[in-house]
Image 1 (spheres, rainbow over the protein chains, first blue to last red):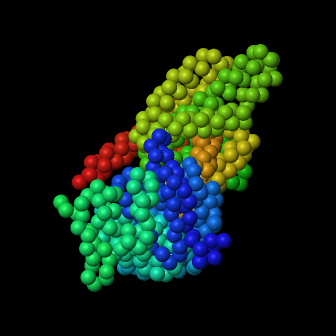
Image 2 (image 1 turned 30 degrees about the horizontal axis):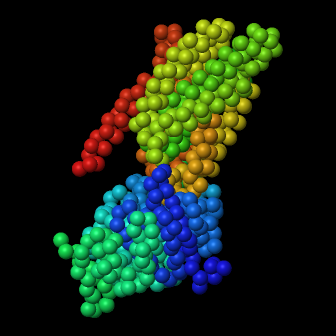
Length: 263
Length: 348
């Protein structure tokens, strides 16, 4: 019912999750459609990373249901989930001695046979992903010789080469300088404009407000707000959720909300 | 690069087969009795008997053992994500020796209780199965003990393996007094690692076991590449992580068990060979594993020939395990030192 492209492709309904005794999520819901860039915001420990991992099927909810294009991602065969959804963790591990092209080719694995021998179709997808992430000139370099920002683009390219319908990111901008942060957000935006459903855990409220179509705010495992950035990021809410008094304004050019903490 | 992956696999296999062929030929030519290869091939005695019935089976046995150990080494290195992993160092070979020894002990006890018929239990196939089970049990134990909160600590696993080997050494030394003398001699051979004579049936069964285990591991090499990433990355790229790991464990244990049943605890082959081969092939397991298995075969054939030839004037023949340990011990120290330095440098 949701696989036709008009309904939501990511549907987490009232999911709860605990690590041992620690409650990470309590009846949290997340719905995202194709063509949409959704930002997950909240203080540390609010359950953002847990929520994207549930959506990716890497964790199984204690209560509630998760559907990815109608599929239960924690129970379905991993290959089937991987063709549908790419997940990029905060600090992906690199096979250091691999070239950029070989690392991006790993994204083709869910589409390949037993030995992952690449065909022309795979090579096309990899070259396309390299182009999209501005990596074509670095394709034959070793991944461990790249800068942090370039390496992040490799993982983005690997996710694109996977040709998923859903892209899930856990903090795609962590440890990046401002220029690379903006580049990462633009790539995510472009992917969403191209018809993908993009969900990213983000920490920079202003960057999220400027780039995302919709924001979901988590606090102590619960979803406390959801909607377009201007409606979600009020001074009142930021003070409640992050415990900080802020100045809240607007970018005069774009109309995006801007919040500045009073240090 | 990836474009010519098929060609790289083909090259690795072709060069490996060449190395195996040359080493087997050399091993057949070397020994106490000078022989003429041409005379042997034309069937002239005694050259033909020496080459075809003594040296060739021995070289083939060494090749099987080497292929199994090097292949298992590559698989264990991928599972532990550490190049110091190896069947001997991790205690998997020790577990195999212990498993095989226990079957021999059980056969002895059964023979005393039930009569001579039960001695069948000490024949090659049950002992080999015991070795494989012992290898699998020790692999599960060592990786299980080193795993906490979903992370396996390579240092803990290696430390455990070394201590486990010492334990096995003690236990087998004790077992030797409990079994008949001819079985005790077999246990001694196992502890030091010896390539001895095997009849055609033994060789055939060994070839089937090693071939099946290595074939299984090769089928998983594409997924092994992905397992070098973090578990959740591998899972999000379509790998059933736990199931894949279990199969690779099984393949590596079966290969190690077969190798120990055939040649005893021959150490460091799975360390030295994959390390050198990796320098030529790069880290892609689809090339690395078959090439390492073949060069591992050539390595043990040469080590065995060396053991035979070097000590000829002294009229003795050290076990091949002594030769590989002599080469492998320092090699291990060098790799360890390099890893320690890299870790210290990595922080800067």
